[in-house]
Image (cartoon, rainbow, N blue to C red; front, side, top):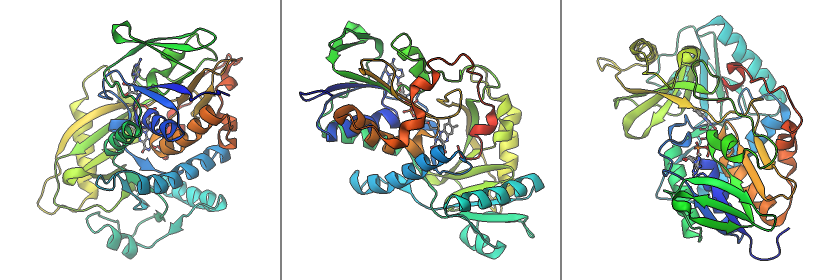
Amino acid sequence: MIEHKPRVAVVGAGIIGAAVARQLALHGAQVWLFDRDAGAHSTSRISFGWLNAHRKREPHYHRLNVAGMAEHQVLAQQLDPHRRWHFPTGHLEYATDPDHAALIQQDVTELRDLGYPARWVDREWAQAREPWVRIPDPARAIAFFPSEGFVLPEVLNDALVDSARALGAHVPLNTAVLDVVDHGTHVSVVGTGLSTTDVDTVVICAGRWTSQLASGLGSPVPLIPADGAASAATAFQARTAPLPIEINGVVTTSVGNFRPVAGGRLVFQAHDLDTDADPGALVPARITREMQRRLAGVLRTGRHTVQIESTTVGKRALPVDGFPIAGYIDQREAVYVVATHSGVTLGPLLGRIVADEVVHGRRSPLLATFRPDRFANRTDTTPVGKALVQGGD
Ligand SMILES: Cc1cc2nc3c(=O)[nH]c(=O)nc-3n(C[C@H](O)[C@H](O)[C@H](O)COP(=O)(O)OP(=O)(O)OC[C@H]3O[C@@H](n4cnc5c(N)ncnc54)[C@H](O)[C@@H]3O)c2cc1C
């Protein structure tokens, strides 16, 4: 444990790094929060932003996500009330496809067994909740998950960075960290222009770039490459032009899921199309057409046509086994990494836990199964398939 006011550098100002930096500042550390381009290419800013522990059945991971959802409620009371980012709306899911109906059945049963709020609703209830969605009659299965919701991730990300700054963190947002050098007594963070910041601890929260930055500093941090075609780490996302309708929360259908975005738009995902998501290529026009067709089929927009304004390929920070990686990677405990999928759900909670571990040395049982040393002697780092990231994004 560090005796003087700890000096901590956080690399990466996405939702996770910003949440960690804010909590470190709250815990009395001297903090630097680096980002190379203010998050212009971060995953956080394009995230679907669904808060959930849905279809996350592994008990430790489920528990972590439930705690992550609760932490958003706490954070919503603490951040600038003029910026609305937190929408604890619940999540409506319905099936037109028999396989999807069976999956909802399994989810409701298993989630209830875990003590997670999940209930069956009838068609009238669902239609009254989402009047602009075409709920099929009869529907095969309709469920509601009241504790879920969504965030506007870019608004949350900015609010976290601003809060960290207001609490005294130094925030060089246009400084790439080129190297991290452990001198045994302190760690040097070498940034653009060869500027050097000497600190006691570095917390690497560089999203899908974390493996590279952490390389050679301790245990490996194996992530699924998000640059190739057909990677489990990539997903299409479409944004509509403004629509004259109101959607009340996250909606999952058998052809994709959507939620509101600021300005009357919707963001839409259809994971069965993601096998074609190649970040190195232009999004095929047929994908945009198909997403438009599917969304138009489930919305009641009257004479108004659903238009897709943009379709992009999102890149996940996805550990090879699908679970978070959080903890020190070196023996001296000077280099801490955090890399995870579902980082919007988990970010605020991880921020609080990581700061507590770094500043006070208190290990959280919530992270016990997610330490980086699980990869230290593992030669088989075969990536999980897309199945593990679908559903509970
Ligand atoms: C399509 C899609 C949908 C998703 N949907 C959900 C969802 O519904 N719910 C959910 O909870 N999660 C979801 N996720 C996952 C979630 O968005 C991510 O887990 C989370 O945003 C990761 O945040 P992060 O801070 O780790 O990474 P990022 O947001 O990528 O931030 C990393 C930052 O590090 C910076 N950086 C990297 N290298 C350096 C360097 N050398 N020097 C300085 N800065 C550096 C980058 O510029 C970047 O700003 C989704 C992801 C995708 C792709």
